[in-house]
Amino acid sequence: MSALLADLADLVLPAACAGCDAERVRLRYGVCAGCAALLETLRPFRTAPVPPPPGLPRCVAVGTYEGPLRGALLTYKERGRHRLARPLGVLLASAVAALAGPGRRVTVVPVPSTAAAARERHGDHMNRLAGHAVRRLRAAGWEARLARPLKALPRADSAGLDAPGRRAAAESSLRIKPGHDAFLRLRRFAGQRAPGEGTLVVVDDIVTTGATLATVTRRLEEANMQVAGAAVLAATRLRRATPTGFA
Image (cartoon, rainbow, N blue to C red; front, side, top):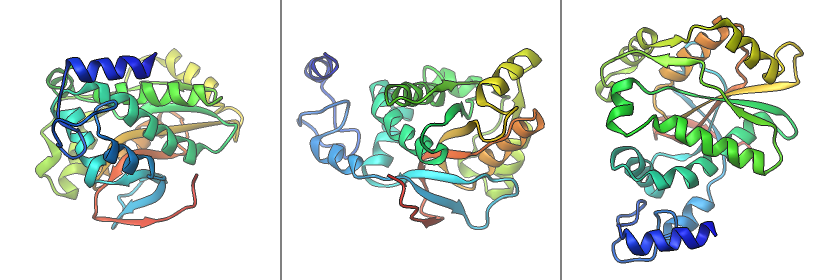
């Protein structure tokens, strides 16, 4: 039924391919057959900025920030093509699974959007992606949940900032939400009282300097949450990437 609905949506709401901008081609969840085939070949790999910021956890990316993956991400975030959240969430789930390992209880924590960014994009884009990733993991037999213990205060756009500027912006913006009971429930699910029973993975769309992921990790560790790593959809070319053999 979901495939039929996707086909009907493509007929009623024709649009260019999110991956390559090709027009008048048959789409499935927003991308053409060629881009879909390329996205399906992506496999998670280890990545890190050079140099990594202090506190950056182990990081896994689905692909480099180029080609159909870059196109799909930009179209999803900047053009409001929310139907892309499902296939992108499925890709994100593969990176989470690579970090967590099989048979582990996993808690997925998305990097939060500021209120202004959420208004501009008609919702928190990472919360939407993380929700689809969790549903994919559950469908594959994982015991997975979504948690949102963080909030983002207003801050300037980090697109034009250098690495120190991004670190300063992240440090001043990201905060733990109030509510001790929520953290007790989060620790209980993630198995933090018994080391090795659970895994907490931070998720974001793109890793550039790693400043945001490092700050999120510190904030969670300040709340006595142990972060296993960070899973992202794309890493910029200014990365040192090491294949890991993840499936």
